[in-house]
Each structure stands twice: as C-alpha cells, then as structure tokens.
Image (cartoon, rainbow, N blue to C red; front, side, top):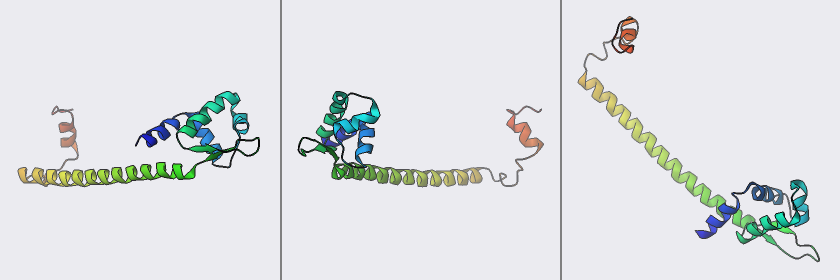
Length: 138
C-alpha cells in the first residue's frame, strides 16, 4: 500500500488539502491556484508536484496552459480504504460493546448470587451516605 501512504502523506499538508478542495470545483492552473493563498507560483508548483506524484491530480497541456485536474478515481480509492477501516472498527466496537454487556450481566449475576440480601438492601438514605464516606458516619 505504498501508493496509499504517498497519497495520505500528500494530504497531510493543509495547503495541499485546500488545493484538492479548490480542484474539486474544477480545473485550475498553478497561477489560479496561487491567487487565494498569497503564495508564490513556485511554492504552489511544489505542492502541485507533491499532489501529482501521489496520483491525486494530473496536469495536461492545453495550448500554453497546464491546468491541474483532480483525479476522482484516486480519491475514490482512498475513500474506499477509509470505508473499509470504518466498517472494521465499527465491527470491533460492536463486539466490544457486546462483550462488555455480557460481562456486566455476568458480573451482576455473580454479585446477586454471592449476596442474597442485595435485593432487599436499600442503597438510599442515611445508610448510603454513611457507606459513601468510607464507612465513617457524618
């Protein structure tokens, strides 16, 4: 999965994420991409190069212009991987929730079995206040 590593590393920079967001609205040249950032075209060209090498964007020649275009297919691959991870973690968390629920029910049953007076005991009022203060009366 080195290609995923490269793409996620490229998206680790806020300027590059902003460039991807801008390109999601349509193609743009490096000059057009540089305008809202107040960065030089050279700085934006560096970020465009990182995004291009990661496969997230492509540049093509259009006469004297070289517009950048977002590669939706590549973003879909990243989204697919993220979705797989989301499903896997949801399954793990559901299993943990079931386990904790089973453990909690088993623990409650063990407590009830070991202390038959538990149901008849009232855990409210003055006695509870007394027990809640490390066994010392108030």
